Image (cartoon, rainbow, N blue to C red; front, side):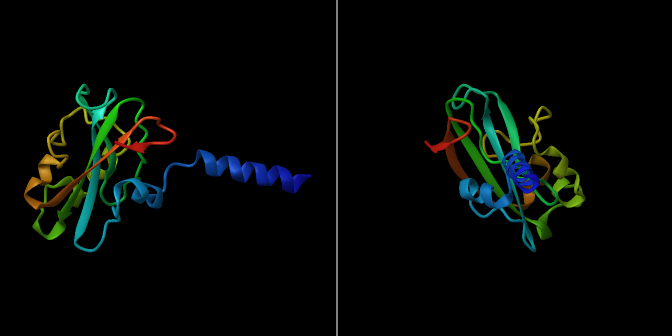
Amino acid sequence: MRSAHVGTLIIAALLAAPASTSQCEDYFGDIEDQDGTVTTVVDPDVTEGWPFARLTFVHHSGPGSACLSPAPPKGCHRYYVATYTTSECPSTCPLITGTAANFTGKRDLDGRFDRANGILSACAECAASVSLVCWRAQAKDPQRC
């Protein structure tokens, strides 16, 4: 009986665990930070969806940060996936200093990310590319839109 209880606890823990990078890749593509490049993912359509929303939510903010899968409550949400070339970043870029990792999982109330393109403004000069992917509600099973 004890092993059945342990198995139930393990399953419950896995279901409650935050999204892994591989789950994020299912939605955002290859976001793994690699030698020479780092990635951010933001949703500028919190919470109402495009074109009604006025807030940005950070799903991934470079090295040392988690990656949160999309969970749009309603409407169609745009997710900007920005890649940066670290050798071209200024020393003050939060992706280089490591402070950007603290942005993940929060609303961007300080306007650090450009809502028009998803680029972290302090690192704009080292932005190499931006791609856009869109997901719509339901939060538990996002669908492309």
